[in-house]
Image (cartoon, rainbow, N blue to C red; front, side, top):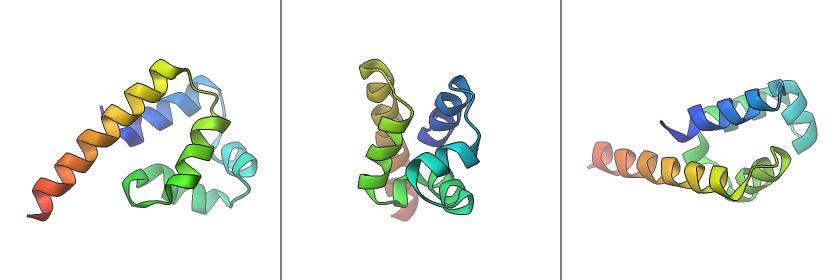
Length: 80
């Protein structure tokens, strides 16, 4: 599973809309949509804030970073 799918799933478990998470992050829904759909190319300060807003467990955070690592590895292979 990729990092985008995981974040969407975590958001869904909280029953949060994109609008709600954007409000909690202090950004527009459009900005949140861009963040959620391209986590690899975003400011990690905002990504960490997102993980905090979603109140993820240590296990969920590990799962997210493993998925993000896989996304990065896939990106590296495609870029070469």
